Length: 102
Image (cartoon, rainbow, N blue to C red):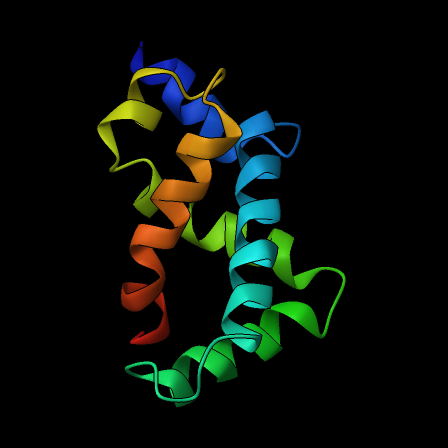
């Protein structure tokens, strides 16, 4: 994929990838709210999840904030305009630990 396609996917408000990431962020947050309290780093994970689910704009804001981190995934980077929901969900779930430590 050309750098310009990656850039457009990362920065355009109309980007399908940004929309997919927003939904994946919301789904991850809901899963964290429902996870076992014994999960490692649960307190920080729960604080992030509540932030994401307590505002209609929060999942979109998180998608915008973390899209470049998601784009570190080589599968997403290779096809940022046609990535599957499963690939995006996998990429988002793989960075949750990083996100909650920031």
